[in-house]
Amino acid sequence: MKRKQKTMILSIDNDDPQRELEFEVAFQLSMTTKQHYARMKKLVNQTMEVVKKSDHKKTPAIISRP
Image 1 (cartoon, one colour):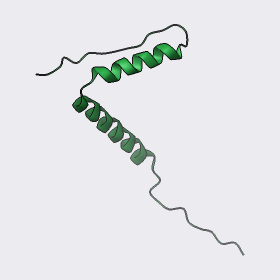
Image 2 (image 1 turned 120 degrees about the vertical axis):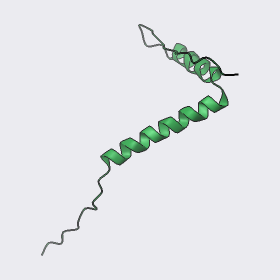
Image 3 (image 1 turned 135 degrees about the vertical axis):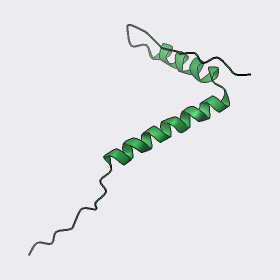
Image 4 (image 1 turned 30 degrees about the vertical axis):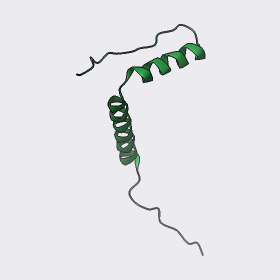
C-alpha cells in the first residue's frame, strides 16, 4: 500500500525555534523508512553534483622562487 505524497510547508511570521522543531519532528515521523532513505540518497546525490560542478580538476602547481 502506497502512502499519498503530501507537501508540508512551515509558514510562520516570526522566528520560532520551538515551532520549527515541532514541524521537523512531525515531518520526519510522517515519512516511512523507505521514504526517509530515498530522501537522504537524493540529498547526497545533489550534494555530490554540486561538489563535482565546483571542483577544481587541476592540482595547483607549486612555483619555486629563486
